[in-house]
Image 1 (cartoon, helix red, strand yellow):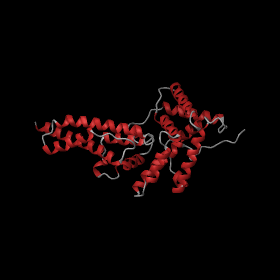
Image 2 (cartoon, one colour):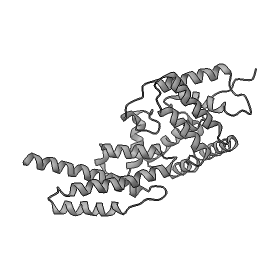
Image 3 (cartoon, rainbow, N blue to C red):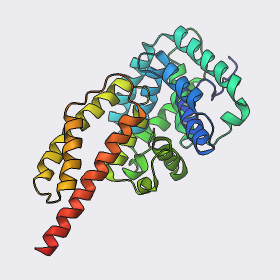
Image 4 (spheres, helix red, strand yellow):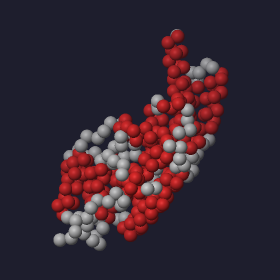
Amino acid sequence: MHKKAKHSKFKNAGILFELLTRQITADILAGRDESFTKNLMFKYFHESKELGKEVQLYNFILQQKSKDASSAERLLNVVLQTRSKLDERELNKQKYNIIKEIKEKYNIDEFLKNKIPNYKLYASIYKLFEDQDKSEVKFDVSELLESREYIVESLTKEKKSEQEMMDVYGNQSAEVRLLAYKFLIENFNTKYNNLLPDQKKLLKEYITNVSNSSKFTKYVNEEYKRISGVLKDQVKNVTSEVVKIKINEVISQFSTKSCVGVIKENQLTSLLNAYELIEEIKKIDVKNEAKS
């Protein structure tokens, strides 16, 4: 019988992605330069990379819900079939290179020691994913069955609320969620401490799609169009000429905007400010209705 293999944080793409996300936010809060880690994430977890593709499969299992065990089994089979099509050699090469770069920048023991929510689920997914490499047997049959049962059980459990889904995989602690928010609003003033629903959604989309920049760019462009339409409707009810000028400037700006490539911070800022403007106009409308 072969020697029993162990789960490796080093090779678990899902855990690496989560730890890098935490490192970025920790660097920001400590006033350190986070560009190295951000560049590392876009370099290795882009949707075109094997590592990025594997992370999306982790993400899929962590976020999905099945009505029963039979549905969960079918879902898991599809995911495993997709995972088996990844280039194993290239995937291992990317994991080796990203760990090498992390070690050059950080103390790897400190980097890996953080407690991971849903660690057992990450480890179970990892074992089944590693088993798709048919070149060698890495885990006992009993261990693979146990991992499969745990994943199926997780897929059929009731998922957490939307508020608890605000982080990259929907299972991080409240502290990590706040760090993630801080990642995007580090240069905004304190008025963003109480985020509006649209602002929360924007942050969620950004964090969720950090390895899929094209999807997030599409979302931002759709928001530009939507906000422009909302403001066109709202400006009709505004009596203040100063506010009207401000609204028309935003409408003019957003109606002609079209982002290409990775979204920049100033583009995120303009969206967050627009959400704030819409909320302020709503408050004015409520006051006017109360007076009439």
